[in-house]
Length: 74
Image (cartoon, rainbow, N blue to C red):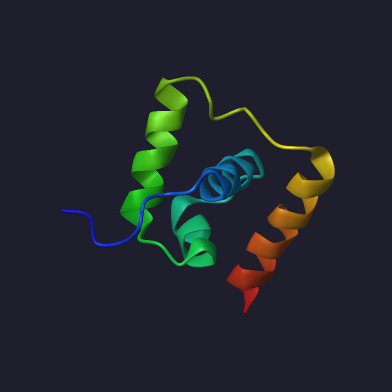
């Protein structure tokens, strides 16, 4: 049984951006306030179905990647 709500499309985009920018699953999970296994599982699923490289617009990607970095430095 799931512990929290389902992963949204925005959260999937954040995972894609984080992975593309070299962030590890625990760092992405910390930013999303999700468990690291949730992020690991979704990254693996997106990689297997070929959607891991589908990034949103570049200006969105840059801002979210910067926010992930800030969240992990704090």
